[in-house]
Length: 424
Image (cartoon, rainbow, N blue to C red; front, side, top):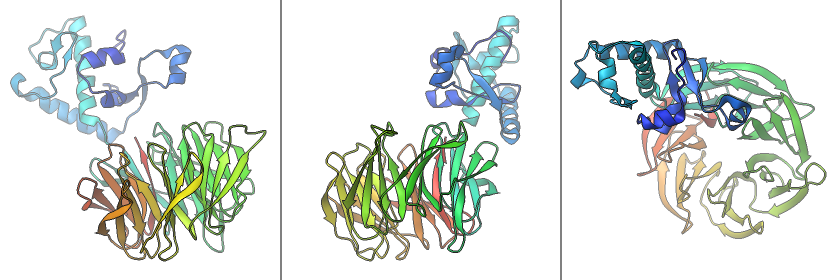
């Protein structure tokens, strides 16, 4: 930004910029800007932007588009924001005055223009288990941006709230249990480090809470937390169950649920008194529970059996008891995911190549979607309009429109895609 010009959230709001774009400010120096975190604001940075490296390909593209806009007559230019009472069209006009103030405003206008052109839909992270790789997919174009190596047989991945860091659980193979996490720089498409776990085997389910990543280590019958900011494990607790596979972490990190395949149970961790006291409760559920998800309003926890026709147990988190068990006709219920509005629940069946759509209120299957081979991992987009389903046997991720529950796109991947995550 020009020297002496401070850009605040308030000024951008007045300029007509949607809040979603404020995190994508771009200046002539080729550096993207983001809003500081609450912690940074506490340290006196206010609401001014900080600079980060911007992707050179994107920068070249937006500059080319901006040049094209400058060549257009004022009445044909897009992105007509008003900055300080001066319209963007007049600021971009080649014949406009260019005193010191106007030049500064012109640069600001360009930053606003670049923001509108580079606002991204985010990045889809896809783990390719058989290849031991992680792919980065642009959600706006559904094109793969990069693919990088991870540890052996990665199964699940989670991204930090700000989308900067992702952590991959390197599960390993039958004869070679995994013992590491891959810490990923999402923007750079690079593995920053391979964190070796302290005696923990087969990390699997993983959930981010800020820069803290909760995960299961099913070979060791524990859950643990990796702090990416300090690069260390700062919490470990036994689950009291076998094959502790998937994990749900409630807001505040005081209550955690795990699906324990071999114990036919769900473990409830009460961490309100941690680390001095840790409460554990085992809830008997369906046989071989694997897929597990919490309703957006926290009212229900659905747990699906991986056994044929094994059913879905519904737990009331207020009492931590099973209130209902739904009959199923699945061959293997692999994953369970609520839609963002909580109205529907998707269940993947990789053996039958089906995606089942449940009405969350009536508990009835309202649609069965035929998928490519091996539908497994499911991810909802933040806007709640689409679901991504990793089809492990087809080397692709399929995109499901949640308004019609129909497949709209396919994304080519590596071998055996499974774990999915979203990075804003």
